[in-house]
Length: 470
Image 1 (tube, one colour):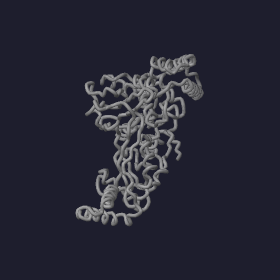
Image 2 (tube, one colour):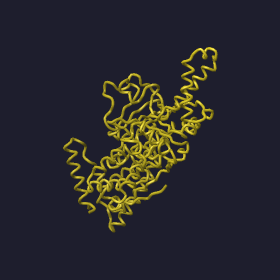
Image 3 (cartoon, one colour):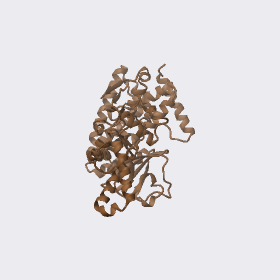
Image 4 (cartoon, helix red, strand yellow):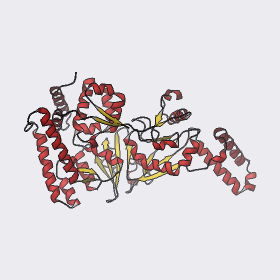
């Protein structure tokens, strides 16, 4: 049976009591009012953009399975993965695919989308591979898949090891690196053969007196010929690719780490969701470490660094949208809602005051200074990413004042919690999501896609509507 408003209120009370016992902050009354207020409106539909995928053809399924086995991603034998029929632009098959693995079975994957927007941080590196490494993809994927683990670095320091060598961290943009090879290391062997042949060609007389060198060349050539056929069609292209970026995502078992670089201020920032890899004694001097759970102060710091920006126009649009929603809710309730939602009405008053203030403040620095002094609830309605960088766009909703939005945009955690929840709690989670996603940019396509593909019947039985495209 679908929970009533009374049931949902009781659920919120129990959560508040539980949080209080654990010493956590009380749930905002404004969150509760958003839940109640939205009940006067038709439930927000969850929009689903189905990503375009590349369909594995012929031997590509076997090549893909062999690559996964080499990566240690198959629990059993190769045929266990025979059900995989599609991959995305970077080789991922599902939302929880390892975030730092690239896998290519064809250069035609370029026409596909990302299966998860979280993998968009790989775009600068993928662009390098599809432009400078197109010949590598076209030639070697005929017989085997190409794959590699992506390493994120700041200069020469692996970002997975910053906590071990904090003194080595220096300011500047990041780099993504990958070395692509096949399960049988065919690319490396081909490059070794090219190096040996070059050595023989540069000094043929000396090489004839070196039987070990000739034996090495013969063994490599015969092995590669058996695997690849005629070797003349291949060229010893580079198998290592690197790209510079102002952002990247690093995951550990304990945390999601958003590494950002603010070029205008030449500052490096780490926004940490989960357990920080650093203690006060070993934080890098040139890295600003921010706690993602302390969303308001973190958002203000990112505003100061120019990663986010304050916009009067964004605020104006949000006020217009909320006003229309309020009017629709009043019509649906056939009565005035005045006084029923004091916190929501108070928020609207603060938003209008902020709009008037921003109209009088033209200087960007003065706007940021003003924004630093207002509440998180108001601040969220007037900021936007000051870049097209997808990592920054992924970050913004995870800094929301609205707990339900923060949890909804933590894709992996949401999937884990939802999968383990009772049907009653699943319905409560869905109600909170639809109550909180008042604007299109608040939708999480990763979660929506997963719900649509894995739990569509349950969601629709709970009154959740999907608008799918793609």
